[in-house]
Each structure stands twice: as C-alpha cells, then as structure tokens.
Image: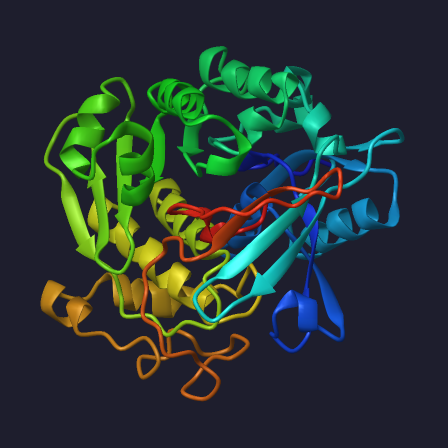
Length: 375
C-alpha cells in the first residue's frame, strides 16, 4: 500500500490558548470566560486545510492540558500535527482577549513558553519533504534567539527544498525595539518569495505608506502584497505591473483572525495557479468570513461560491454586499442578524498588550495585521 501523500503546505509558529469573556464584556467585568486556541500560523493552516489543501503545522507545546487542547483543536480542523513537539519543561502560552468599544485588547502570558524553544531542527522532519509552500510570520523571530535562528534557516537554507517561502510581517511593536524590528523584519522579508504586510505596518517599520516604496525596500523578495485595510490590497511582483483589488465592505463581529484568513485565501489561490487579481479576491472573500465570527477562524467558503465571486467583472466585484451575496452564510453571527456596524478590511483594529509572563501586563497600541491577535 502506498504511503499517504505529504503536506502541500507547512506552517511554523506558536499557538496559544485564548480566553475571552463569554458575553463580550470587558475583561474586568466578565463573569465567565470561554476557551479557544489561536496562533497566526495555525490560523492560516486551518484556513488552508478548509480550502482543501494538505497542511502540516510545526510547533512546540507544553506537556499540559493547554498543550493537549491546542494540538487537539488544530488537528480537529484537518491539519497534520505530527511535527508538533511536546515539551515537558515549558508551558503552553496563554492570552486573554479584552473586548472594548473601540478595539479588542490582547493580554499575553507567553514568556518562556514551549514554543519559544523552537529551533532550526524543527524543520528537519522528513515527513515535511515535498511541500510546495513554507509559511512563516514575523512573530516567531522575536520569541527567542533559537526562534530567530529557525526563521533565518528557513529563508536562507531552504530546508524544504524547492518550496516557496511566504512571510507575513505581522509586526508586534511591544515585543521588541522599533529599530531592531525594522531591520530584522525587512531582512527576512527581502529573502522570501511571498511577503504579506499591512500598509500601516510598513509605515511604522520603514517610514513609508506607499506600496511601490515598500516594493523598492524589498528588491529581492518575490511578490509583495501590501494590505490597506478597508481600501484594498496591492500585489507587487518583482517584475511586471502591480495589481490592486479593492476590499469588500465587511460587517464586523470581531477583526481578530482576518489577516490570517486573507493570507489563507491569497496563498490558496497562488497554490491553485490563479493570477494576482484572483488571488487578492480570494484573500478578501476568506477575510470577510473571519470578520463575521467572534473567534480567530471561520468555516471556509464553499468553493463554488468562492470561484463564482472571484470570476466577477471588476464593476460587479466592487458592488458586492457580502451579506446579501451569501459570503458570510454558515458562520457564527453570519447573515443580517448579529453583525456589527463597522466596515473594515483584513487589517488591524485591535490593541496589543505586552507579554504578561511575570504577571505584569503593560499597554500599547498594535499596528496593522495584528488583528490576527493570536500569537
């Protein structure tokens, strides 16, 4: 009997247990908390698995109930977790969501987590050979020196051979000094085949809010995708013209996870061989569904619905109402009832709070793409 096919996509990074008020109230007034899991790379893995791809998630969790919960949830979504290591000496990270009228704050307790012990050897698993895409985010290199080494190894040594390397910049301003973040994240992005970055992120890191200028800052990268929230997203290949696709007007329940959903939709289209216009549209459609749920991940759209929307003429695309078009059917809070009033694209409207590993939680504003909230 032939062996089962290996993963088409490999993602690497930390996933934590998330606790959030059951009734959506601010954390200090919450009577009950609900448990979930969230992480940029596992969110993307779940999204791609839902779109029909074979995906493996590589990480490290504690030998504790939270670690078992994380692995079980990700595996239950159809993601291969055979390359997740269990660490008997370090805990699984935890974070809390704090809903506010203006944004959702996120409080992290992740210092010294099992995932911070990831190192370049995590990608040596022979089961990962043959993957077409390796996905990384800018969260991982700041977790520890060994995690930074892992990301550098992934983009330089290309341990998965001919696999494309995609990199979501996903800047967390409170985790490291601005000048170091700017240098490290730019260096990694410039060695990737596909880069996803929010325009606000680029402005904060590199002082530019011009997609073409971002492209020039990353001369060696393959395709650079610059997301501008409710405005839209621009794909800038290394050669050839830039492609802009406007965002859909999205009803919002919670923005956390929308950036990861956009990345999943976009990368799925790339893996399917679609052009940049179609890929950006796929990203927008999948992000719309994430915006319509209170958690990090939403059920994927039906493939026929996705393909039908992606094929629309430009004028009809611009006029789509995601609710009446059925793009949020089947998700929690989907449909006209239960949706928030805001309209945003797959960008950040959350607030980031510094790591509370010692019990001391700071405050601070997050940037774009941090609506993924889950690391």
